[in-house]
Length: 168
Image (cartoon, rainbow, N blue to C red; front, side, top):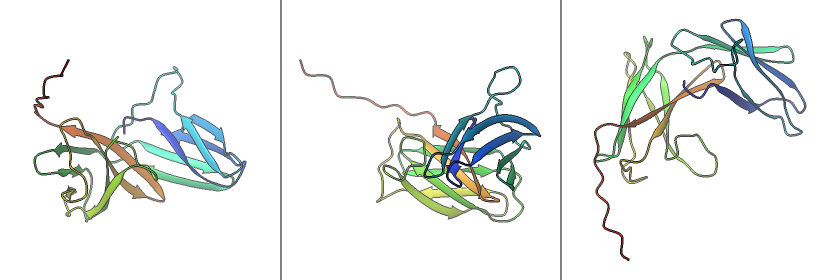
């Protein structure tokens, strides 16, 4: 929710526009492979700072996909290697994917767990045996609605890391 940017794959050289609550805030032309990326800015040149309830629409050609943003909260527990939290506005279980480390979904260097929330939106993803989380790691928590992935970063709470002294 705090990244305020959109990217994805559409048709090659296709024009993509992104609106937030009906106001265009980004546009890009996809490359020859169909990849597009655009940072979003409001009418004052500021980042829109998505909040729960915002409607984000992505248009390419005659296709329009939209998503109503849900709140995402959570934390990383480096002792148990668990990322847990809540997706707001959920009335039935929802699929949640958690990516670690580096806080960005990546096809080349990240680990992920996909879990189902409960009916209240609470989720827990255990990375034990897959990735050893530290107090410096954060995670991207994501859900997909109408073909659009929405993600937010979550961080460890109240951790202390003692490093060994540097040898000189």
